[in-house]
Length: 336
Image (cartoon, rainbow, N blue to C red):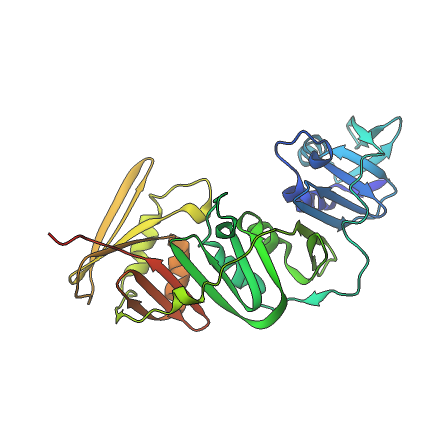
């Protein structure tokens, strides 16, 4: 069967988040052709895309996508013969082991009419809250963004964030931080929940599913009940944060951080990286004891654009605005 090579590569790249980088199971490292669809499943994430084809079976993802991505031909022909996927272009031939029996369970996506519309700002809210999560195997909820009713929220135990949405979600969705970016790239507009999976569909009818998480999420509402002294953070801070960001480094974007210190009449921003450090002072109308807190630089940039007030209490700083709230614990210097 003939395919446009670029279109085929684009579809395969959509499936990559469901391909396991290290796994003893061959299925978790394979693209699976099945009934005018192609899918990938690593037991935590399942992704399915529409693809007109007459193939049934699995092919190793790394070799298949790698070959197609490095091929310059505009068209490619795929044919299965003797348990081998034969790949033909105008100037090349290749064969990759093809297993016609290796397919995911058929019941991962059950036929249903229970698809529900997502609020239009669902992805914006989930992305916003992703920055206050952390991987902690002893407290799994700290790695989750919780979505329920008209709010998304998250906490890493040191900070907490909520974001209001324009519509409501009846189900409670717990979305692991590590898949938020992949879900955002999928651009879902509908969802439904079954006994084991949460499924999302986009306008192209691609399906992105993740396995339900057995986790009880605590009530964070009490942490946002803060009354303190109003302070001004906006003036000149954005430019300083952008410079400080240059000296941060982490494997995960959510782990990047800069330190902000408030002293009497002054604000200090510091960051340290593998190859250098940064520190800058600026005047501010703060009067009080020195306090310090850390923040993800991109998250602070987004907050500064929409914040309307900032309050400093004894042990935490509250930043809030139209449709969002953020709490961060502060460290006060000990009095001598």
